[in-house]
Structures are given as C-alpha cells and as structure tokens.
Image 1 (cartoon, helix red, strand yellow):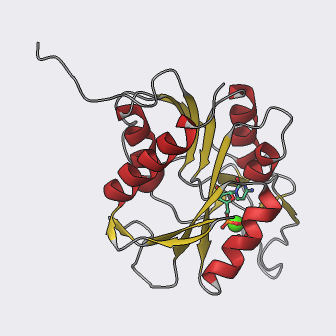
Image 2 (cartoon, rainbow, N blue to C red):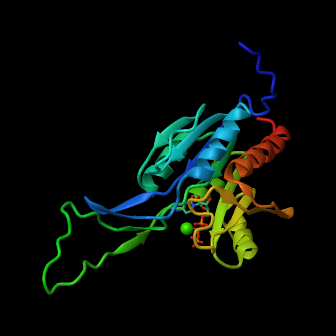
Image 3 (tube, rainbow, N blue to C red):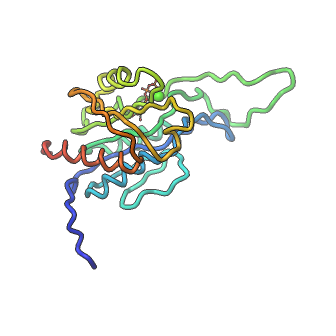
Length: 227
Ligand code: CTP
Ligand code: CA
C-alpha cells in the first residue's frame, strides 16, 4: 500500500459535529422540521476526519450517507441531539451545523389527528427547544473551540455577532439564506466567519471547499491550545 504522508494536524483531537435537521413529532405520522440537507455538516465532519480528528457526528434525519472515517450517531429530535452531544463531552472542539427546529409541539399525540367535519385544524401548543450550541458554549466542560452557524435572511453580520456572544461561541459561520433555491440543499455556499477579531468574508465556493477551509481553520486554532 502507498504510504499516506499527508500531515494529520488533528490527530488525537476529539471533535463533535451536529448536522441535518431535527424532526419534532406532532402525531405518529406528522412532524415539524427545518430545511436542511445535511450536506454542509457532513462535509465538515469528513474534512475534520481527513485531518486526523476523532469525529463524532450527531446527525438528524438526512437523505445522504454517513461520511467516511467518522463515527455517526443518528437522532430525530432536538432533545435527542442535545442528549447525544452532552454525552460526547468532553471534546477538543464542537461544530454546530444542524438546523435545529426552534420549537416543538408540547405534546405528541399518541394517535393520528383526524379531520373532523366542522372542527377545523388542531390547535398545536408549541414550546421552545433547548439551544444545544448555547448549552455547550456555557458548559462546565466546554470544548476549547466552539463553532456555530447562523442562517439569516437579513442583518447577517449583526445577527451573527449577537449569536457569537449569546451562545458563547468562538466563531460563527454566517450564511445568507435569503435566496430561494440558494444554499439550502444546494452544493455551493458563501459564508462569513464572524469572531471577536472581526469578520472574514470568504468567496463563494462549494460546500466541500467551505468544509476543507473550516477544518484547516479549526486545526490552526487548536494548534495553539494544549489539552
Ligand atoms: N442551534 C442549536 N440548538 C438550537 C438552535 C440552534 O444548537 N435549538 C445552533 C445551530 O446549530 C447553529 C446556531 O445555533 O449553529 C444558530 O442557529 P440559528 O437557527 O441561526 O439561530 P437561533 O439561535 O435558533 O436563532 P433564530 O433561528 O431565531 O435566528
Ligand atoms: Ca433557529
């Protein structure tokens, strides 16, 4: 076999990645979900693994394969994703790419809702899901490096800076999702890296290239942090 001599700057580093949407059940046949293909999160998990990291991917329901070289855990709901992530701590870094549903139906009906003539649709009581990134960003076993994403349709940088502070993240990868048929489900992405140091604007590139560059940035950052 050929000897792989590429450098593995993330060897010995454990990194948690969340990806995909979450599905929040309404009844046995229906759910609430965000739009997310999982492409960007899975690509980041794969790119970190290529740099030698021990990657634990916590994935919501997606239609794509588990990435090579990565340990993948499959979950359905935001609460399941939160539990899986917290059980994986401690870690050197965590990257939150998942499009977590912000709300869930307070109760999931045991039986399917039926249409009843004259009664109209069921009134769903919604409650807020836990913020998984904020929980880890402020955790007593917080990883040295915490990276979040921000999907925005307006005030991209302002909103990303607010999320950076509120969630205790080191970087927010800010994504403009206002274009219909744009980043959601597509193969290309244009992001800005928002940190305390300022805003770094990356040109439009494929989601795989974003993943490769982000993995390199994470490796660079972790190099200066000893465990
Ligand atoms: N996130 C999370 N858990 C949630 C909601 C969001 O971990 N319950 C993470 C996402 O994975 C992402 C970041 O927080 O890394 C920002 O997600 P986003 O939906 O843009 O922000 P929200 O805080 O939910 O605010 P809003 O949707 O109102 O813009
Ligand atoms: Ca949200």
